[in-house]
Length: 342
Image (tube, rainbow, N blue to C red; front, side, top):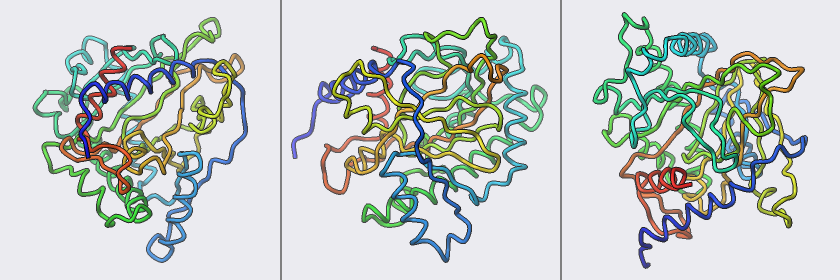
């Protein structure tokens, strides 16, 4: 098999960007079945649950889970401290900046999606546990009591759930159960899975404008995303990639489906990394966070996302060999570099 050169990697990423640039319009509201899967009794119902997850994931790349094992009290505590973090002054948060190439730290309105060409109306704080101490990115207990311990425990709880779900995909792809777990190792210095705390800015009715977005349309770069939302704080929408790809007219509006936040439910979606690793059997799905409408809640919106990203040295190569091997670090760098170039 011939190895692709750097130009081929960049060309692939630029191709993705070219598609994303056609996804920025408001589009149409479309009803779709976002399946919710109960993970309770997973030991006795493993085959049944595997089938349900696989069917939902291969259909639209999004699904929700209940019975996931993360206590609501732990989720609420993490949300409370995330809100307290974002309430700190910009000067204080600026002590822990998001540094290029690290995917760790705090940023404010710094992400511009190719789909919109405007800055996302949000701020975020990324926790990549293998890098936080080295980069000095943890607030002290004097600055925010209990923050580090709470977020480390919450990150690990999400990792456990993500690995349970990735075991399903490993089995369905004909791999050993712990194939992905071995390649998302929190003990490794190559670990790059990330917990991202998100604060979408409050909006007045006068600010509501079709040209700006809380988060423009995009796909995630990772293997699997777990998203925690707060009830009453709407805005997340999805559009299956197949629907976008099958448009005959690139100017035709896309159909978007709202994914409403429900207490005790975690929303899951496939990322680009797993789509490649599965030789495109598992689709990575477009999603966005729209601005609130005039008759909706317009206050701040908070969410928390765990991105299961394979360790830097993991080799992404699907069972059928549709794509050339590439390390997870190279893959992420190519996608991020292409976005900045765009």
